Image (tube, rainbow, N blue to C red; front, side, top):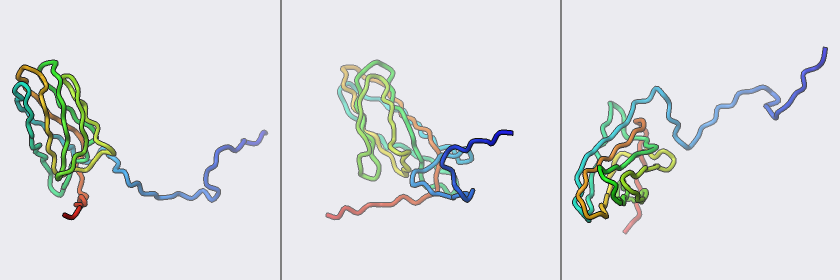
Length: 144
């Protein structure tokens, strides 16, 4: 009989390690977190929309990975995403703006500022999907 060749770097003592990650991991048993809002933008105007985040018992935030702002016409839109007075991102696009939240942010408050750069009025929709979390979100004090 031939010997089985060893390969890889594995652990010599065959131990198992429990490690923690600072990046939240979405698991299938968590509660779904969705938000949806419709609004109308007149020609060449900007609107600030407060997004309602619904929470189940014990939940304190939405871990959001991605979202979308879309219009019912092929017009240029620009958008800013804000939470607790801090701007998270800024983007633009024609008709659909896909929003990627860095590191699946945990948010308990969400505001979007959307501008219609066209000469026609459009109906817009914002939505996101993620999971609800129970972690407290650290507040920042930047002083005066």
